[in-house]
Image: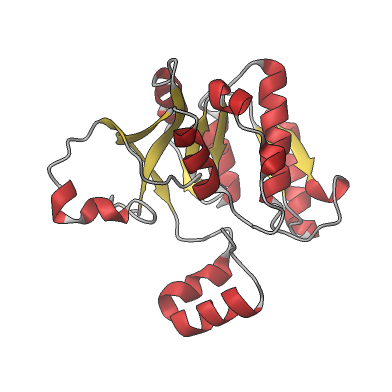
Length: 222
């Protein structure tokens, strides 16, 4: 899955940096091979930290600093998301002064909106056209652009080290800074359900066990 997702991004023509968050030795070797074949920058987080996965805070901080050093926007695509050749370019075209974030809406393989955009299935949202809309609702970083303007204004060193995920935090930061967050209903991507974190599938198959692990093992803190 991750290989297909990476190659889809490579075909979009953008600079690609892949973060390997303590994958198995076999998968790390495969990522090394893919990176060499396609001129991708690959960062094994084990070379930067001995903190166990997930290391989303470190990834965001490193990626932000890299984007700022190049004067670029930052586009985050998770390893279980499949983009089209023009997905990222269409996201970039949405950026102008005052835009903090641009997200491609995520769907399942049948084209049905999935988490966290499943609220769009409710009747009061069905009147929305398939276009790009400004929204105050939080984003997922499954396939999301953080504008250079946001990266300059938001200090990622302030991200709480006690949390695992920061989609909600940064979505709120963007709005609090007076920026707009844009959701592209006309630029969908397929998000396969928790392929990168299979234990989270328990939320659907065994919710009691999921929440037990979430709270007792302090997993999935947002």
